[in-house]
Length: 369
Image 1 (tube, rainbow, N blue to C red):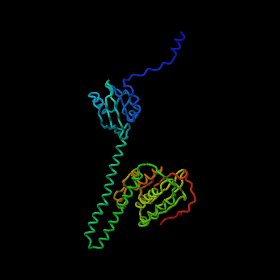
Image 2: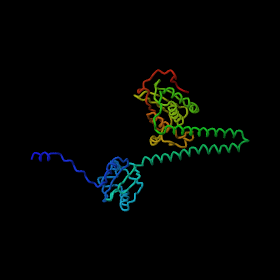
Image 3: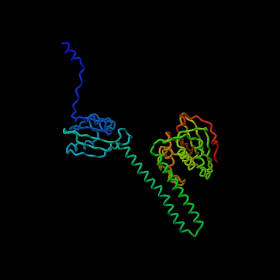
Image 4: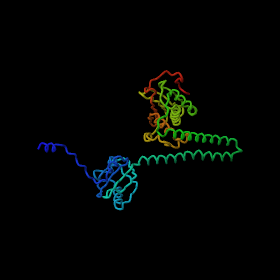
């Protein structure tokens, strides 16, 4: 009697639920990266991965995508594996749709169907960006190349007019310089756009990087009587690549000069900020509309395309700045108000983990005229 009571008190192991799946299928579905759904002969969901539920493909025991249900029924009817692409609307108002590459196949002999859906939204977005980039590069290269060709023909026709030859030769130099800048920017962008960190970061003097960038921009600034002024905290050091940082700062200063009126000034200042160093470039220019501030770091995006081409910009400068910041483990931000100028701030990891000024005797901090 006691033995019977002890046997009755022992916890019972729940019996496995027979969902009709072939042996091992459940284990395979659990490790698949794609959204996986198994339907029975009545179109009820037997198994669904967490990804399938997260994307809204499955709710309860129902498959919510009508296109997938139609494919599953065709596969169940003739046993043929089918592949397709479908797009589902965002689950909330304002959300972007999600694109899936779908594969539907029969499973077992009891009318069950396996549905695999792989999210390819990001892949399609990257492909679209790549196509746009190639189209924009082609357009930007075609403009100076076409201009050079026409100017060369014009110079040939005006061989007997020295004044015209000098004038057109000057235009050819301008277009050749524009082409050179574009190619250089493309090379720089291809080097850093992968988002990979700097392979061998070194100690970089912020003072030296700022003054080197100012030196490279002085000619353009002087032509508009714009003063380039270096200020802030001296002796700051950051981790990174010296040439890339100079390139990023040069692009910020060039951008400030291009969109500033004559007889103004551009201030480049550095300051410690915890474990980072902030380098800001402020101008007294025309400012950037609020609606465009989220897009200004996109490749070839221009707030005013006509003005940008008139100033000789390639449309890649701010994109390069963004990628340089990311490659250094930092970021770039912008504050701007139309009619009041703009301030771009580059935040970079400080050398040694904390932005503490050290004595600097290499470059004095003074206004660059």
